[in-house]
Every structure is written in C-alpha cells, then in structure tokens.
Length: 389
Ligand code: AMP
Ligand code: MG
Image (cartoon, rainbow, N blue to C red; front, side, top):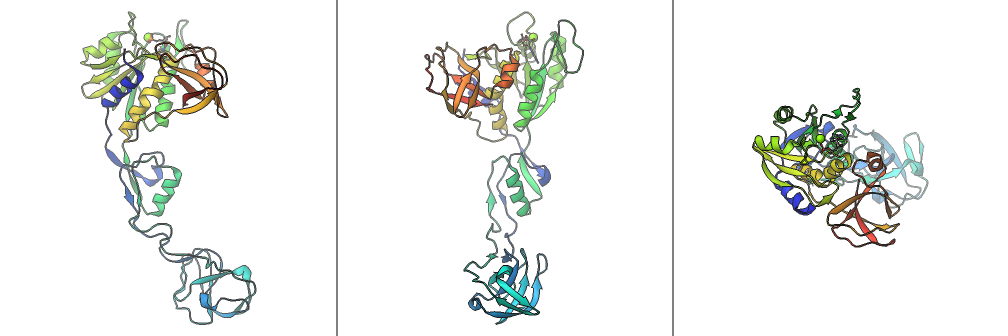
C-alpha cells in the first residue's frame, strides 16, 4: 500500500494545467488569473483634488492670503484656463487640478465673500492633490496566477480590463454508485439511504473552482456503471463514489478496467479512505473514492483539491496549520489518520467517535487533525498539525 504523499504525487501526475479563456470582468471574481494583465492607463489619469476646497499656487498659501475665484472644477468637468497669481479655482474631490495650481486649500480653512476667498485657518503642508499615476501607471501588472478576489476585480476594472484571461474551470463528473442510494428529495425504500457525499463533494469542488456534473446514480451492475462512465465523457476528471472495495457488488475497478483504465494505484495507507483508486481511462483521469461519506469528503480535501489546484495552475500543496492538543491522544497505527476535530483559539480537540460513516460529526468539525503513521501517544499541550475544513 502506498503512502498519502505517494498517492498525491501519482494523482497530480494524472492532470495538468488547463487552458485559458476570457471571462467578463463581472464574472471574474473567484476565477484564477491566467496571464499577467497590464494597466491600459494611469490612475488617476490627471492630478486630482483629494478634498473639496480652492485650487491655488502653493507659494501663495499663508494665513490671511486673499484670492480671486475665477472658475470651478468638478469631477468630470475640468477648468480649462490657467491659474494666475492671486487667483483660485473652486474645486471638488476628484476634479482635475487646473494648470498653474499645485495646492488645494480645504473649504473649512477659508472664508468666501462673493468672488473673494481668504485663508482663515493654518492650511498645513498637505497639498490635498493626488498626483497623476499615484495609484498605478500604464503597463503596471497584476501578476498571474492568483485567485481573483473582489479587490483584484476592482483593480482590474480601474485598469480598464473588461475581459479577463482566466484558467478554464475543471469539469468534474461525479458518479455515485450503489443500489441503496436515492437522490435527496426522493422517497427511499426501506433498505435505501440518501446519496449525501455526492452533494458534499459537489459543494467542495465548486467552492474550489471546479464545475461539477452530477451524473445519475449508477446501480451495482456493470451495464449501469458503464453507462455512467459514458455519460462522463468529456470531463477533465471523473470521480466515482463507492463500489471501490473488493465486495461482490464493488464493480468500479472491474468496469473501469473493461473500459481500458490504466491503474495508477489502488489503496492508500490512510484512515479514513483506504480503498482509493486512480488511473486514466483513455485521456480522462479517473479517481474512485470510497463510499463512506466521511472517507469520501476527507479524500476530497486531501487528494482531489490538490488535483483541482494543479488544473487551475495553482500551488497544489496542502498547507497544514498547527494547534495545541487540549486532551491526550493514544498512539496511531500504521496508517496516516485524519481525525475530525474542532480548533478553537489555537486549541484542538478530536471527537470521540471517528467512525467514517458519521457525517454529523464531520459537520461539527472545522479541522482534520493529521496523525502521521505510527505517531506515538501525545500529551495535552503538544503541538499537532491539522488541515482546516
Ligand atoms: P461502498 O464503497 O459502495 O461499499 O460504500 C460504503 C458505504 O458508503 C456504504 O454504507 C454505502 O451505502 C455508503 N455510500 C456509498 N456511496 C454513498 C453516497 N454517494 N452517499 C452516501 N453514502 C454512500
Ligand atoms: Mg456500494
């Protein structure tokens, strides 16, 4: 059986970064920038007032100085003339500073009577002007790759980039398998349960940049599974859930094999999630996740998210956080163990029952505490590592 790390490396070998496409700026948030993008203009494009007041010459600014107001500059409406000695232009925030002016006396510091303004309060040294290009200059770039945050989208807008080069979203086809499964909202028979991890995984993958196609549930027959694989064609990754052990009804490996799957591995030294399988059917990567709901979700975090990140050209590494154990833990066995846990204020506590069918406990957890294989018993107060979820 291979280690978690070996499995992850083999899985990453199955995928590569997808191509780029253009997204309208309004839909770009959350996408991954595919190429560096350069500003097409300076921002601001002109020296602009940062306060409401009077534009004057700085050399003339002192208390009690008096100016003649010769015009007005508002945002979107510049003053066309040139300011001379002893003159002022009424100016508002965002307006271009008139030629000849290099200082804005704020309106709170003046007294105006008719066309005359007098500086009544000490105006200070701050000119209240944003120089042209102070935010960014034409040609300045936003570097790829990066997940575009709302702040990045605002910057791109300001750079006048209406269409943004982004990585294509990985299309993931999800196949649930099992005679016992029905879709949420259907009426289950007495021996049936609701397909749950299908929806958990869809949510997890979509929150991480994928586009998920939930295929009809495959029954535990070769014909049904074969049909499901056919429906998956064209996806960047096909994932089956369940049917991956060696029970009589576990047909995924058999059917995938009949469709020509080259198996990369089967079984990982891990808890939960041992019966993981992966390979390639034609040129489509395939991963078979275990059916137990918690195993499937944990494998989603530990194995599938790195694959999605590679396809999105992001760093595929898993980043572990550290916290202090609030209660002792017994020794770990030979498999890397991801334990549902709760982190609060730097302290981490695992849940008592770690059975891999218990979604209610997974839903209460906000961390997967990672125990390396053969990790000795740990005392309260020791530092341990976890994956935030
Ligand atoms: P299997 O790997 O098919 O033997 O499934 C292991 C366990 O997970 C069984 O109890 C299944 O009923 C359950 N299971 C399999 N697939 C799903 C699913 N999509 N949603 C919820 N439970 C599932
Ligand atoms: Mg099954």
